Structures are given as C-alpha cells and as structure tokens.
Length: 117
Image: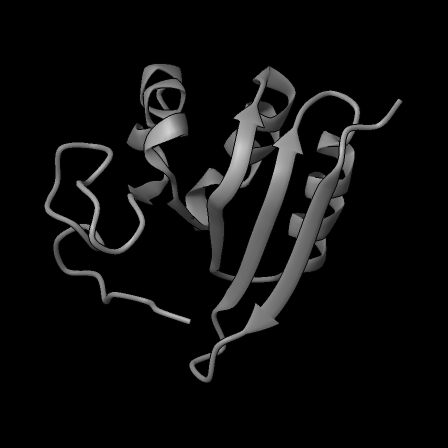
C-alpha cells in the first residue's frame, strides 16, 4: 500500500520552482518525489513543512538533487536531515519563525537571497 503524499508545484516570479510536499515520504512513494524533482529544472525550493515522516528512500531522492535544492524543514525532520549530512550539500532552513536547521541564521546561506512564496 502506498503512503499518502501530496506534491504541489508552483513557480515564483523570479523563475524559482517551489515544490510543497504534504504527508509521508517513504519507499512506497519516493519515486513520485523523484519524478516531480526531475520535471523541474534549475533551482527548486522544497517545502517539507507538512511532511510528518521521511525515510532513507526520501533522503536518497533529496541527495540526488541536493546541489539545486533549498529545503524548508520542520523541527520534526530537522535531526534526520542534519544527521544524514544533507545540510552539507543543500541549503536547509526551518520554516519562517523557527530556528535554522544547520546552525546558520534563519534564511539562506550567506550571500544567497531569501525566497518566499
């Protein structure tokens, strides 16, 4: 049985793609996330704020695209994202108003613009 995952894609005026995920990302549906990211070119903000579970299959997909991703990660997923090492390859931040995930101040890494929907 496939775990429920809702993916919604949009594009910001500057051309940045925004992909919002809701539900759980696991081995039963990680391929859907992979296809969604493969279909989007260039920089992609992936909002995981409504994701309640992320397993290694989902992490593997995110690692595959890490160089062009900015991840918005809720506190619930922050530890798994940080321990996996994904914070070393992708820009990662908490939702607005929450602490940063990778020890940097809230928002983008130094020298990078903040992107909001």
